[in-house]
Length: 111
Length: 111
Image 1: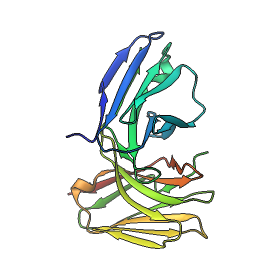
Image 2: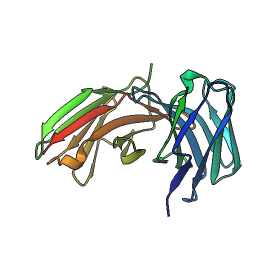
Image 3: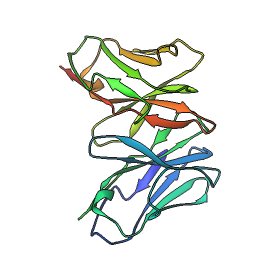
Image 4: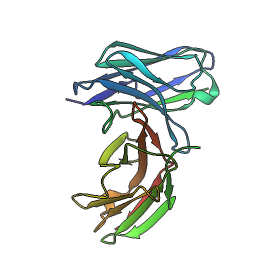
């Protein structure tokens, strides 16, 4: 009965690899988000989708590509991983422009 | 620079004392939200205050908003060891009410 779930929880990979993180919410929310939290705990929005439509696309390298197959899922694919991509990535959802519900996070380590 | 700036950056108090955390921001907002993050976990929404509200309560939490000073405070009364966490303020602005987070405050409550 988890509200917002992410897989995997931990991801360790080599530079140059391509990886994906999956997110699912069972709250019936229309809006989903991806955030990146760096080692200093600074949290920055990357993307937002509303009912499968991209509505926020911050200045993120185009190696990052979100995909929303339906409004309950928002996946994040990262190509050609770099050392600087190491961070914790959080998925969140909200009932449109109100409080957000966060997933447990995916800790990505690029070696 | 990010919208929300919290102070202090770190706060250490004794159990039973009150904890006050402040947040300042720069531009007009739709609402301001406070979140808690326990170590290694996702963010949990605590309270949302709209731009036309001045004060809001939720259990042991009291939030104030002063739009003329572009500042907010979060008061946790009768703190408990379980309140130990990082606390973030986030401002929602614009048509999409994009959330912009501050750097967070680390609260330690000593038993």
